[in-house]
Length: 96
Image (cartoon, rainbow, N blue to C red):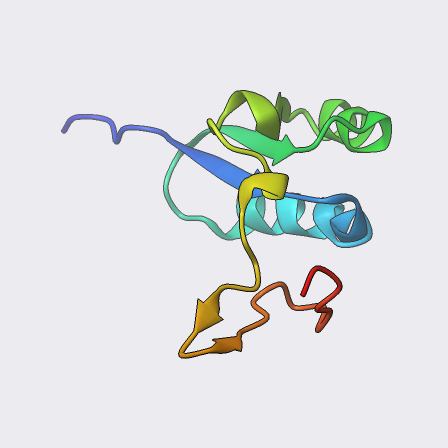
């Protein structure tokens, strides 16, 4: 019988997720039934997130090196049928 291929677990994170990130990492390692290659934390450059990634044995990747665009490039309030729809989750229309 051939061994199963390993999968990598990618966890996108921002600073507000720091409180639950250790639990998410531990949960993934304990409950994913497939063999795990590595756990990769994708986040903005942040010393605290990087330190936690090291502490938990995860690889940290700066989100700006993964995508060709940044969060600032995304229009969270597109105009739909003459109305602006806020898709940011914050409910703000400061630019409009």
